[in-house]
Length: 291
Length: 191
Image 1 (cartoon, rainbow over the protein chains, first blue to last red):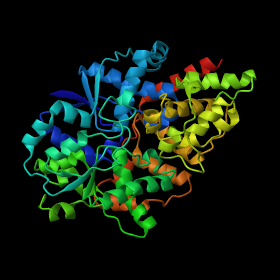
Image 2: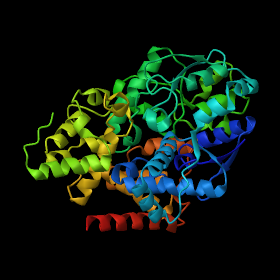
Image 3: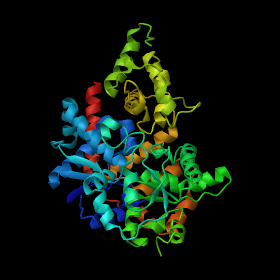
Image 4: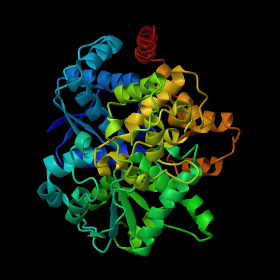
């Protein structure tokens, strides 16, 4: 299976581990990732907040690049990028005035007929649990994982058209296929504070802190995520949560692709597991999952 | 719920927000599910219900200087739970655009500053340069050493590289043009 791959800006820098592990597991699952040539930033939350025309135009430029690439399916590991691509495509399809303006801005016609997937959806629905199971070399036995979906993958339901907006289960089933013990919780799709980490740090510490404390209360070993922003907030703000609570937290935050990669037998380093603020390796060694 | 007094200017603002956001605020029941679901609502900041009430009541200045919509992270909880499916992040974009056009000072300058720096990077280079954004934001927000310890630890672990700051200075004329054309269309529609 060949798909157009839109990594997004975070995967080039702070979320390189997500990019590395995505490439490893997609290769195992016979998914060929062909990067969108010369892709540009989707504008993320700043463009979405400040100008609708700008936000839609930036994603439309990327859609046009995928069309030029000649591939129908495009996969985005970052949920915000994914939602922007989907949102822009449906806005262009349904609003001819907007389409005309956007095409004037990017100086290209937009087909708006692509299949846009988040990486989680593509792995869950198109690769399938059976194929994932067949690749497992080292089951994640005894690893208690809470699946954390965050916001952008599952909301708004009409835009993303994926899973359940309040109680999603796709990531649960992926983790179960890897042999992990999935812990159900109420915070699957609660917000981590998203893009406010630098400018409203207290808000992010409060929101991410709730998630970390709840995962601890449920005696989970790890939180598994599918979003670079969720990973960064839960991992990098965890020392701030510890300082606030006057109590050390140590909850490793893994990308689901890293969990897949470990169970497929890849080395921790090749999955970027050494780079997290909260080091997951002692725990994974203790569980006998990695050497 | 319709609290407009009858002054045509009030209705103008409401119509403008409805048109830009494509959200029919006149259907709002003021039930408060949005605010109850909103992760960034607080006593200090308020919630989306109040913003919508202000728009419906013709309180233009209050709505445009309400900090709530600056805080909005577009999580989509409001629209998921709203009985009439009003999407408050679309309302946030509408209010932000109108506030900018009318030169209303940002009620949340820190959030505004980060958004501006982010877009400046995209405009110039085509992609966001994450580490440079963090450094320039912390510098301009007069907190140059914030999170420095964390950055050093990540560098020691090899997760991020200081050379990242030096890479990728190649300009991208495509995004520069996209930003210029968006500005041009905005100017034309203002006339």
